[in-house]
Length: 113
Image 1 (cartoon, rainbow, N blue to C red):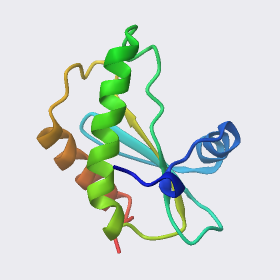
Image 2: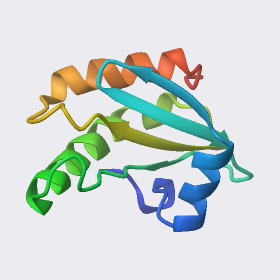
Image 3: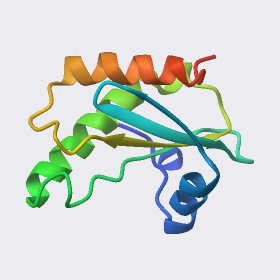
């Protein structure tokens, strides 16, 4: 489970990352990240209706992404706001595949310590 203080929740924070952030992607996972002035990194998961019309499916993908990113949280550099997005065509994702793709996207973005 991702701790509350490591979650990106406010609309303004998401807008700042999308407008000023840097982009990195691998496979079906892409992320945008930017520096923040906090001692910890925060992660957000916007999964919209373009992914699926069903809220159950969108929430399941968010839970999977949140669980995977909590495993990588200890090895991430502090002081970043990260937005993790999943491609709409990637239905019924498996956690092992998503874990590998997210790990490679983090390393491509140079976000590991």
